Each structure stands twice: as C-alpha cells, then as structure tokens.
Image (cartoon, rainbow, N blue to C red):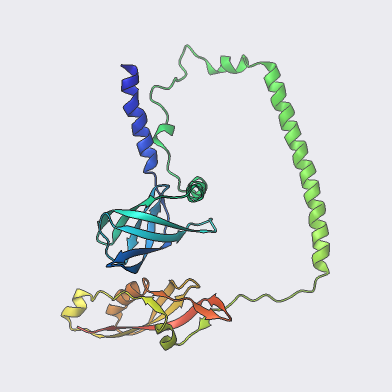
Length: 289
C-alpha cells in the first residue's frame, strides 16, 4: 500500500523538474527541409531548459516538424547546435523539444541553468507541510546548549584557519599587484580606440540579404490609402543579425511596421580585411496598397 501510493508522487516530482525553463531572449536560427530544400527561419528564444525551448519565429512551422537549431546562451562561449522536433505552434510562438543531445551539450545546458539568476525553485525543494516544527516539547534553546563543546571548538579552529589563509592570500596578492604595476609602468602607453562599425552603402548590403520579412501593412494606413517609403538607419552585427534600427524618414504611421519587419532580416556577414565586421547601412522599406 505505501510503496504503491508513493510511486505516483515521486514520478510527479520528476516530471515537474523536466519542464523547468529559464527566461532568456537570444537570437536562434532554425533550419527546416521543405520539399528537400533547406529553409532558414530566424527567431528569438523566450525561455530555454535542459529538454527544449520556446521561441518566437519569423516563419511557419507545424507540430511534428524536424528542425535544426543554433543559438548561443549568455555566459556560455560555444554555440549550441542541435536537432529538435516541433511540439506545438501557435501563430509566431513555437515550442521545440531537443533530440539526441550529446553529453557535452547536456552538460553545457546544465551548467547554464545552474548559473542563471532566473532559476526556478523545484517543487520538492519547498518546505514540506509535514516537516517537523519546533513545539513546546522541543525547545531549540535546549538543543543548542546540548551541542558538544568539542564541536564548537572545532568550528572556532576552522574559522581561525580560514582567517589566516585569507590574510596570507591577501599579502601574496598585494605583492603580485605591486610587481605587475611596476612592469606596466615600463610599458609605453598606447591609445586604444574601439572599433567603429563600417559604413556600407545600401546597395552593397542588399546583395548580402539571406532572409527578408515583408512588413505587415497597418490596417488604418491601408484604409487611409497611406503609402510611401520608410528609410531606416540599421546596425548589423558581425553574425549578420540586425542589432539596432531607427527611422530616418517616411510616413510616421508606417515606421513601426517597417522596423518590426527589418529586425527579422538576416545578412551574410560583411567581410572587412578578411574578418566579419559590424555594419551601419540604410534600409528602405516600401509600402504600396
């Protein structure tokens, strides 16, 4: 009776741990085969866990689709590339479950989830309602006074040893710091300037577009027969993603729709001296009823 009754509770706790997710918004690239041809769909994660992730994507997927995905977690240097299956899709929101993760990939996800500040609290870590509480029969003061004196002495010795170690370590660090400062004083100062984004003409970057999302025509602007071209100043990162966008000219009622579409564009990384570089350019989005 007791063993059979406890099994569902244990299974329920394990299931709750498996669905823990951590909120994080980073770019994610998805690849799906359509009629044998790979199609790249950009997106941005909503939350990530050890078994899968939720994302907002600029494309259409269906439950059961197999996809390849690639993204980089904060505080983790390497990019994670994996296969996944679409478990649900609603408008632009998509839920994916990882498939066939290697031991290194699982270790990377576990390392990130343990370091993130947004880790949820597991249900079986919450205080148990049946946990023993102090009552009139159990006096915490009596328990404390009955603690063996030898244990108290050992704790004090441990604290003294830690304090001595900290003092010795601090003296060693100070000597190292002074020696390093002396070495730096012998090196001539050199002016360090931050790399500025490359200014690239719009027609050049237009040839490097790998994924373009058409803007959604605002209903109010369409009814008012409002049309024109919105010009946007755009900052493109080294990986070809759009980092920043702001309007320069064009109808104000169409600017938001134009910026929302361009944020999902992807470019082939611009090469400068054989290395990928950040780029500032101008993007024109045309609206015609």
